[in-house]
Image 1 (tube, rainbow, N blue to C red):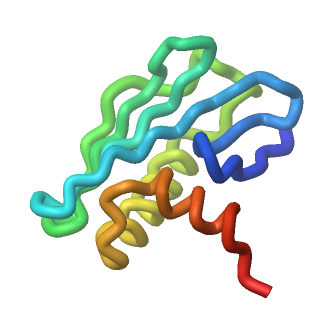
Image 2: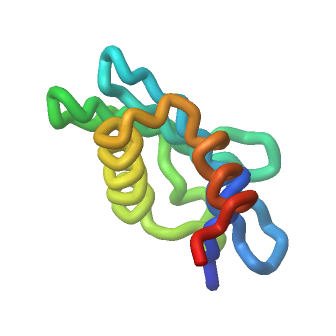
Length: 106
């Protein structure tokens, strides 16, 4: 399966089977929550606490079979995104991605 980054909504599969990644960011607590959704059902929620260097995971993507990347890959992706958002003080990832789309660097 080929996956691409959709700057507006997270990750989408190229074969139109959609995964939405939401990244609510709490800069005060230094926590970011990522969710894996498919057809309006949440399969996995990952809360990354950057300050405490901990991760809480609820659910799994196993039921998605070949439609999903591995559970560990999602967790690693959420951890990387959380650190990026917190380190750069981005409380609104959508606004950040909108800015990238509307004002691409040359």
